Picture 1 (cartoon, chains in turn blue, brown):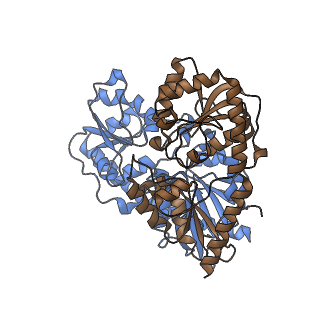
Picture 2 (cartoon, each protein chain N blue to C red):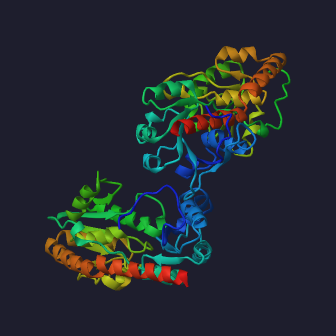
Picture 3 (spheres, chains in turn cyan, green):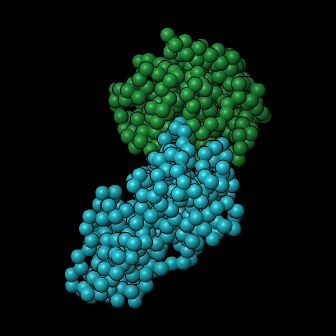
Length: 295
Length: 284
């Protein structure tokens, strides 16, 4: 691996899901591209610059962040890495295998995705977890008294994991806050639950999360959920929120003391293991490896 | 010379750039992230050669902007680039631009035995007033009352490939174009080349080449006695479906018109001139 040698200065680009699909503020583009670009110059080996993809510009390397565009990848001569953070092979309109075969390497957000991908390719595969941009954490949760509110955040497409958790929340007399792109409406038999919906917004979602005492992230290993990263959990830990995956976890964090203790422990862990700067280091090292192999 | 896919722009390799724009591109979000960003960024990146902007639309998007707002924003985006419009009317509306009506190869279209049906081929959604989707929907409902099923291609029926589309169109007796401000909708011309009996609104140059009752029918215009009234259009469609011979005769006349008006040779010549002029003027 050539990371100790003087590396060639490169112009690296991220062709993001947002750019390719004409969207904005998609979680995966923020977590796996924009946050890395932000710290590109200060973390890892000096490889040059990184930026969001611009049409027509020539780059030395392109990260195709959840972008499956075989025609482009085939023609492109620089270093090309396919970044996968979802079980997108379950979407029949994507052409993952084709995109993969023209890439030099693949990065995945989870080990589960990597294991699946390794069945499909002999290209180098690296796991670069979803990590946290601590610069966006201006304050952490101040825990006071007995827990009253649990909170969930995520895309409305994933409400199906939230529905089964509602009886446990009701049974404990807790309120639920949902931060999402659509309003969460519980099933009719649970209409008595006290619920507050906040629309997800780029500027407010982090402060909205602090309105809860415990983040619930119901454990689900079925179907596509098996491949999901732990980014909700790590984001909550970074904000000082305990995370409940099953109903008994909620009981563990009902008291102020338990939440403060958990908050301190997990904040230490997440700062050590889930700082996005580590993702920059990991990705740069991977690029250097590929660069050496291509020579 | 055949086209070739490239992954980036390289200075010194090309003589001229063709960029694409329409009135939707001026929406902030679309200009930032959607199809407008392709124009915006390439226009920034390519600076050493002349650029021709193909304006696919017209200054008509009342759901979002006034005509003047569109013209102002498009002018700012196009700048000194040459702008080509799809219709003469579009260039008049913008106040500048070189109109080039499209041209096609007649051999590409199939004039097949005609089934007695009425079809329209416009995109399934978006730009509702521009395409006058309300008018189309009202006509469809009126026809349905009479037991006539209008086929909106892309909504009611989808082709599995280009050939299947051309065959389906070529087997359709009547083609109905409801658009208000779409400049020279291609599908209408495709229907003319396919020998369909075309019923169209007169806007955006169509009134220049369709003579009511000769090579097509004008709808949505009081002058022809078929105003923008779904009942009047349904009356005409119903009458024509019961007059197969007239449909065929008018369809064949429309096909001959298409060969003259939309000849590929004329299209190529006009484009060649614009390309040469743009390159020459840039050098000066």
